Amino acid sequence: MQNFIYHNPTKIIFGVNTINQLKDNLPRVKILFLYGSGSIKKNETYQKVINNLANHDFIEVGGVAPNPDFDFAVEITKTIKEKNIDFILAVGGGSVIDCAKFLAIAAKYDGDLNDIILGDNAETVTPLPFGVISTLPATGSEMNSGSVMSYKGNKVGVFNSNNYPVFSILDPCLTLSLPKHYIGNGVVDAYVHVLEQYLTFPQSAPLQDRFSESILKTLIEVGPKTYMEPQNLEHRASMFWCTTMALNNLIGVGVESDWSTHALGHQLTSMYGIDHARTLALVWSKNMRLRKENKMEKMLQYGQRVFGINETDNDLAFELTLKATDDFFESLGVPTTFTSYPEVEDDLGFKMMSRLKALKMNTLGEKDDLNIMKIMQIFKL
Ligand code: NZQ
Ligand code: ZN
Image (cartoon, rainbow, N blue to C red; front, side):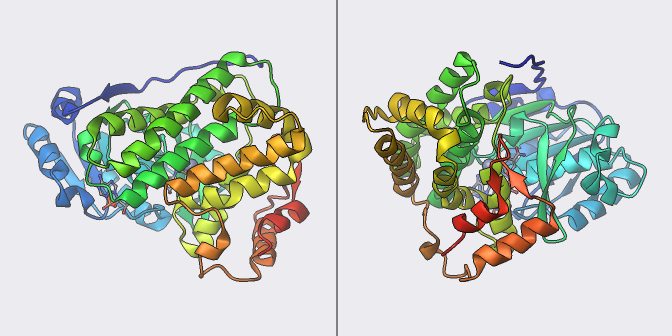
């Protein structure tokens, strides 16, 4: 295990009706209330937030779209600066939270905002503080410091190690309006977050392994239940805590992570608009199969401990584990084959190769063992 510092300052306020605690956690400063394309107005969330803001000085800005857009965020940054906003309240899914994180950096950056995306400048500022009400269990953005923005046709990660939410309210009641489709997405996104940190190679980090395996097993237990019983609050709450724990950095401390499935999935979202989680289900097992030699030891551990696969033929155990994972994704209504997406073109492999070359992504993975030629095989239809 490598040395590490773990510092996660986000206060988590978890559970039924915890949205009522919003007013007590908001600072007495000028607030920007940020939200998405209107889902919070179709349920009670918007009104509940407004009630909590009754004694606060605030302005509201809606319209953050999924896969939040850089140019849209640049416009909001102007409002933040003109109105002297001191605190952002993000209410929504990963896209709204990520947009708020970008704004928190942009509001304090005096130069050209393109620099935040294109260089390391995001780290140079102390971001504006922000709080979160998460309405979609999936990304873990509510308890980490990273964000993903759409920039000129690409998805780009923006990182600042101080850009954690001050607080995140995780009230499962606010998520009951989610269409079933997004429950499947949320479970798969969180599951792959764990796999990208866990399924690498043995790194003498047994506690991180056991944490990861518990999240995977809990998602296998409660994911299908909340998918089949979308109004069951107990299941939804357990799913929500899993999705947050999957990407709050805890399981990834002291170990090398992979993240190649995410890097490739982001290309599919940029090219075809496929939901983030759905791209991961398309890529993961194909990606693992190409890197069998380097992944074998952890794959056998994962198959045995999480799915109870005790096959002694390693090659067969490897395949059975990939199949068990794909079957789990499919059971949540999340397809694992490109045939489910008619919009995907036959020459996807070549298109992907030229995109990755342009982005200078020549190798991916914890051992840089996924090169462009292998990547083309993932996308050969
Ligand atoms: O925009 P509104 O009207 O709110 O509707 C949203 C959106 O259409 C809707 N929704 C959210 N809560 C709802 C609801 N509908 C009904 N009831 C509710 N309670 O759901 C739709 C999708 O929302 P979005 O925020 O885009 O989904 P998700 O939470 O999956 O976030 C995806 C984004 O997060 C990024 C992805 O790349 C993508 O841009 N990620 C961020 C990460 C991070 N910051 O740590 C890690 C992830 O790997 C991921 O890359
Ligand atoms: Zn993800």
